[in-house]
Length: 327
Image 1 (cartoon, helix red, strand yellow):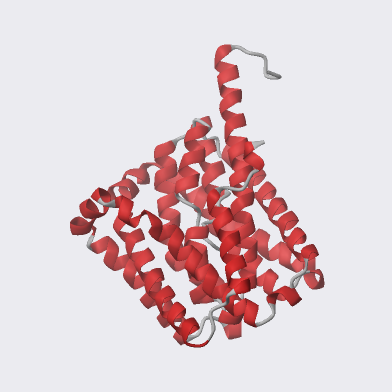
Image 2: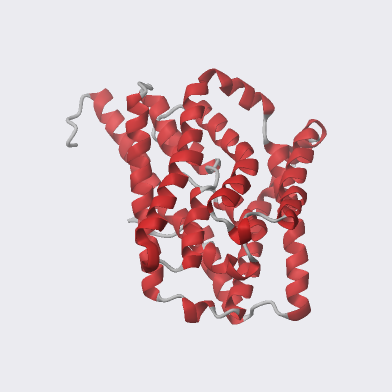
């Protein structure tokens, strides 16, 4: 029953949407929120670069087959599935929600939850750390490129948008990683000071995006049926990807521990990277609605993967103890 309850962060997201609905940022306040949001996004990706361990990535090169498969699922199979779903739904899907589903499909994997669920299920945690980290490094470049290729927003990503991507995402990330020799120890010692940055920046972007969406009449354009429809579509996409990741892991003869890492790293999409990227890559007027599929997918993947990880762990305990599988 606990697995069906939303986590605290999901409740904060809902509360932020409610705040933006009642008190959207307007006028000079909106300008100030927008500038502060841009600074927070840059700082967030600076911290991503600082936290990334070069040794962890280099150490994972030995398991290149696993990483290649996870990356192929994350930036290959997932976008193809997203494109197929949007094309199949056609006129039944609001165009902005369709953009949101496609944007969801091209995002990198999560780091924390991929590693946590791999650990719970008894998988290869070291491989999960390397694979999830590599996914986020490549995603800094791959996600904007796939957005330009698949979404065709105003003919692609404009020079202004590319400049924003460079200034708010790529440059802070690279600088953070280059300076980690001097900053990593400080960040580690004072991680409690930086812990709110990830969630705080997401909540800030959500507030800014939904303020804009409220001013553009989001709640007159989005019905309860639309919301439930996106929940169903997200569940279907997650189910297909998890089945595909499992089958591919077995097809390429990975051992059980690696199969688990592939399952959980390949099926995730990062809310932490996705929401800030959306504010840079997508038109401001559509961001509030477009990130809904990602926000819903965040909760769906947490519930489903927590349940599956515990089932895998329980099954392994039953096998090792000789307990019948039905138990």
